[in-house]
Length: 140
Image 1 (tube, rainbow, N blue to C red):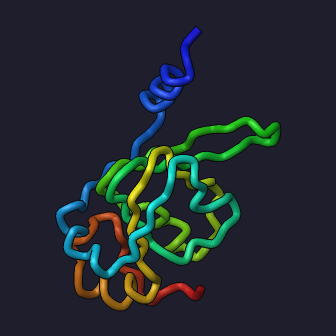
Image 2 (image 1 turned 180 degrees about the horizontal axis):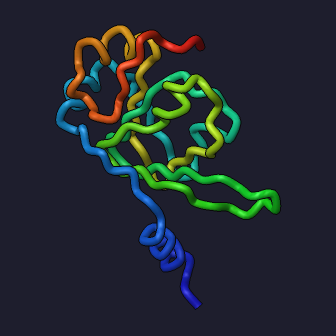
Image 3 (image 1 turned 60 degrees about the vertical axis):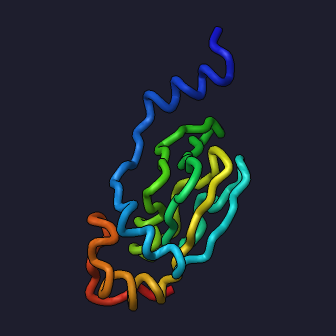
């Protein structure tokens, strides 16, 4: 029978990882964000929450999970250092359907909607290849 640590390693191996590195470009943007320390196990967003900031994971590991109708946990995604996260609900202006949790002690930078739409997108296009260029900011 695998131990909890072995189970977690098996889950990580079998789970998708979001890895679109834009780390070099984001380093220059960190002074514009607000640094947040998340202890292991801290829920940043519960399922159904609105997301009003874009996040960059500088240190640690973020896990995204959901629960089925019976209450069983399903790990959807792991985010590793040097990546942004929460971009889909942030840009769509819709609630997240996932629980976003610190899977280890994390150092995260959050960027406001105002900064993202008025500074980052127009003035730092190389910051991340996955950031779309919307014609206007969604309300929220």
